[in-house]
Image (cartoon, rainbow, N blue to C red; front, side, top):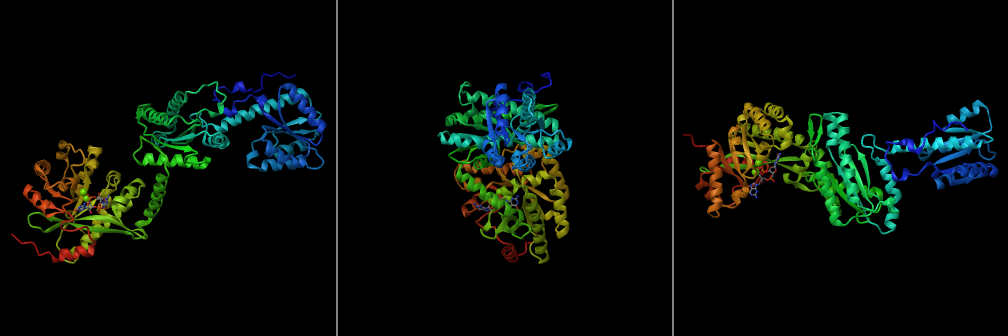
Amino acid sequence: MKTDAWLLDATDLAGLPELPELRSPLLDAKVMLVDDEPLMTELIQTHLEEAGYRRFAVCNDPTQALAVLREQDPSVLLLDLMMPAVSGFDLLARIRAEREWRALPVIVLTASANAETKLRALKLGATEFLAKPVDASELVLRLRNTLAFKQYHDRRANLDAATQLPNAAWFERRLARALPGWLARGDRVALLDIQVPECASLRATLGLAAATQLARTLAERLTQLAAAHAGIDLASDLLEAEPTLARLALDSFALLLPRLPHDDDMQQLASDMLRELARPVLLGAHECRPTPAIGVALAPDDAAGVAELMKAAELARTQARGAGGMRHEFFSRELSERARERLELGEQLRHAADRGELRLHYQPKLDVASGRIVGVEALVRWMHPQRGLVAPGLFVPLAEELGLIARIGDWVLHQACADGAAWDAAALAPVRIAVNVSQPQFDGGTLVPTLRRALAASGLAPERLVIELTESMLMRDAEQALAQMRALEALGVSLSIDDFGTGYSSFSYLKRFPLDELKIDRSFVADLPGGARDRAIVRSVIAIGHDLGLSVIAEGVETREQLAALAELGCDMYQGFHHSRPMPPQALRVLLAAQPPARTR
Ligand code: C2E
Ligand code: MG
Ligand code: MG
């Protein structure tokens, strides 16, 4: 017998982690034999049994070979090339034509010493040759080698290269194979979809090596947690029921818990994972702070099939992400319905600007002392073909999330400037026009150029425009905000802080910002005239504004009493349903036209 030294063995595959289904030694492989000669298959089987193989599928009727193959799902096929009824070549060709059998090792048996025959079989996809009559030791060696290569190949094909965790293809197959059994036994199964966006985003910024290192670190943390939480008797006969961790995509992992822990343990596991994954990871000089989100779905509660279960976990994870990440969310039908609706709305929103479905309504801003309209606030609406007029509270956050806000904001700025220019052309009172911008617009760096274009296109003077920002936009990165505000100031537009009092503005920062106006949030106005405390709050906000040299406007003024209180406290301007609701431009024109010209001093 030849030396064994070059032979691959399962133990040579060190470094590759064990996967439950790939754990079996080579001798557990199921060997299928196709030969029209029963004597031949018997002989081969005897040789192999002597070598320790135990699992066989024998087919002496080649016309049935494909059916047997499908039913038996062997690890390797020994195929006779010369059979009277069906040619081994044809069989080989048909096997290779099937996607699922493309990687199946096929050892062909041929009595022919003809090189052409061998070449033809090779071209058709044979893995190995064995000469007939079969030499026992040669047979055993070839088979063992072929199986070892297959095992190696299987592991490679089923592992994520970076983390050495099973990949999505393997995970789905394992789940598909095991789920029906678990459910039939009455088990409940939990699937956790764990997303860490930094694994993907880092690749674009710091490169592949850093992204790989991050994924590895996170995989290690997850592995340790999963093992700690499994807490199952490892001698269990339920090897199949161990938790399984996999890497599903660049930025997502999955954890499968076949025997569902108690609900409290589930919660604990999810929050432990969030905490562990969020711990900073040092990548060279860069410190990465992962922001994981986890979705949990249960079978059979939420889904009975694999695809459905994975979809449910993903949906729950999307919800957790939508709520800001760093949290976990359980799947619920209600959530899923809402998510579907949002998805549909988002799709329609994508085209809203092109299809001319956006509208601007205007709400007057009035001078408290004179009662004159001194400005307007532009408020966007969406004229939805089926739902009618949709308020911005419903679609602006969605647009921000979907990255559509810049387009919508663009339209708003252009339309507001165009409307203002049209009022000027009609010789209406030259009021100031306030426009709201959102965080991504402010951060994105396109605000200033867009504004410049909108002003140029309409011919509106920049002094007529007020940009409304919120406190949170200014406080997130104060230095960057300051630079952006200076650029806006240089353009000649005014700046207002909207919803003032709801954020946590630092007074020292406010002093540094080139602001013109402060808008008291309507929650404070709602409390007026109210008791001494409420008045004290509003009074101090007005005092802060005036101290900073800003004009102060109150929003959400609904009653005469509120207006009287504001007048008494020295508020400069107001806006609210008490005077008028936001209205279409035509209605505003009528109001402006009816306003007598300002008295000249
Ligand atoms: P905001 O800028 O604080 O706008 C004031 C909101 O208060 C408006 O709601 C307005 O209709 C409402 N309001 C005015 N007076 C009263 C009142 O007396 N009582 C009550 N209860 N509410 C009053 P709207 O139009 O639904 O807009 C909501 C928010 O959507 C705005 O809050 C603003 O943050 C955002 N938004 C509106 N238009 C745009 C836009 O073009 N771009 C961006 N990024 N955001 C916008
Ligand atoms: Mg506003
Ligand atoms: Mg406001």
